[in-house]
Length: 59
Image 1 (cartoon, rainbow, N blue to C red):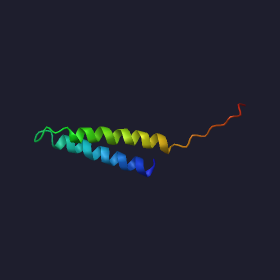
Image 2 (cartoon, rainbow, N blue to C red):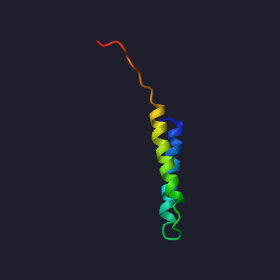
Image 3 (tube, one colour):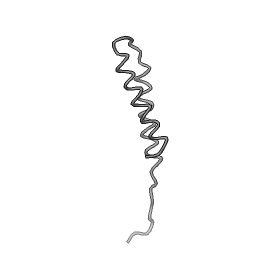
Image 4 (cartoon, helix red, strand yellow):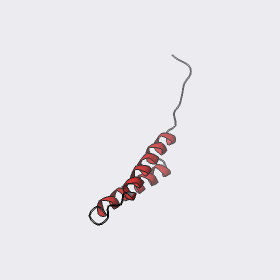
């Protein structure tokens, strides 16, 4: 896992936890939106971090 992917994963977990903490006190959707954004960026960082090797010679 790349460093940006790990950072986005941590941010997604923290914003998800913040959403659960603030559920009873405030009905703000901002932590949930942040969770979705960071989770999406985490998936993109995982895809971008992979090194895909393509062998054009079929054996």
